[in-house]
Each structure stands twice: as C-alpha cells, then as structure tokens.
Length: 92
Image 1: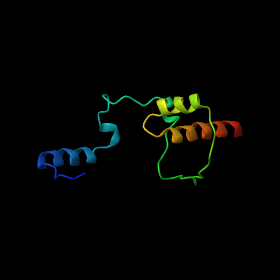
Image 2: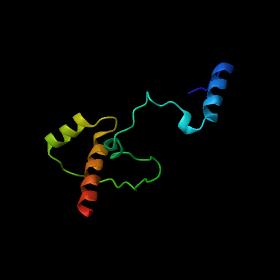
Image 3: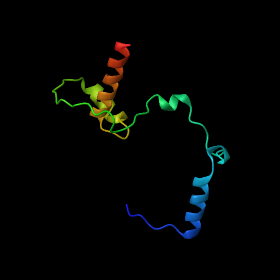
Image 4: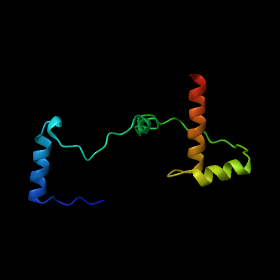
C-alpha cells in the first residue's frame, strides 16, 4: 500500500482536529459500540500460543459445518477458537 502525500488543505484539517481536546470533537455520527461487541475483542500479537499439530478424527458433518461457517479464518482456526472458549468456560 503506497502512501500519497496529503493535500495542504487536508493536512491543515487533520492538524486542527489533532489539536482539539477530545470533548470538543463532534462524534454524534459515530455510535458507541455495545458491550457485546467487546466480548470477542482481542489484540493481535500480544498472545501467540504455541501450536501443536495433531491428528483428530471428527464427524464429517461437524467438519462440514465448521468449513461452511468459518468466516474470515479457516475452519481449523474456528474449531480451535470454540475449543478454547470451552476450556476457558470450564476453568471458570
């Protein structure tokens, strides 16, 4: 991704915005994120557990469901996420 130089007008607007105190910035068009949105929040790079390759036999329909429902990541990552949540809940 290349960085283009900003026009002087745009740079001036950004500088003025950066100089404003937070309470003077109009954010009415930006809704607050609901608390539920933070339940799955993570900061990438802070915790990278060691991965261990395993052979695991799962029912074909379970694998098919995860392959179909894995969103932006692979189905194996989704299975790991579900198992991690289960483990954390069981420890609580």
